[in-house]
Length: 289
Image (tube, rainbow, N blue to C red):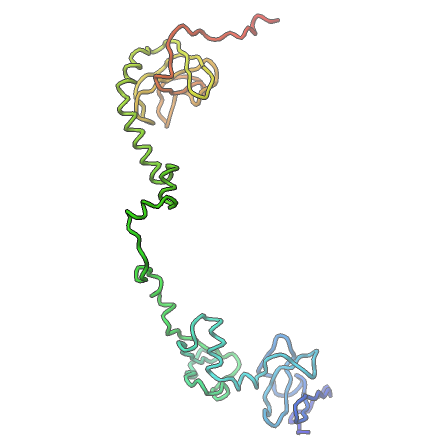
């Protein structure tokens, strides 16, 4: 049994399982423990191979402990520490430069000897290991994809592929191809301006009319405007409906084209308007008592 330099006041001897019997003093020893373990109570170990070296021992397990001891840490090699830091910083151990800093941020030295033990360096509580990456992963040299060789397909060959994204957008008229289709329709509308003007010339202002739009029931109203507009190209006819079946009050995008009540006004194309004797529909409710 080895001699205990600081007697334990709580008189709780614990024996380790190694070949040399030792006694372990609890934190009531005079020398404060420099190593702390969140899962264990630091105790003073009096052992011939580690005199006055404080290591953590689990409070609930006096015989066996799975915590990493200070003895184990001090006997770790610098290369072994680099390998453990690979999982933390993401750099290979061969590209690391380790620097040891004290608790007050003073450089104590470089851990540049792979086979040297950690205990050979002035390691103390609060020391910090700073990792310098020499692999270039953090310098941004892999962020520029233009430097990476890659296969580039010619545009003519890509246009021939039936299942590509471009062919899908072209078939559905989506994205930039929707704008191209809209321009094509505008050109077609411009070609038909002559026919629309001829029809619009036969629609006088203030005349009664009937409006038939595909997919909607027939509506009756009064012609209030005939001519071009700011919201769409071509010739448009502004109609004030007899019932609130419209979309606005004669104003579109802040411009007033004619006067009517809200939801009574609408703009339609000249082919949808038929001028004639279309009086307001009478539902016969006034004749009932």
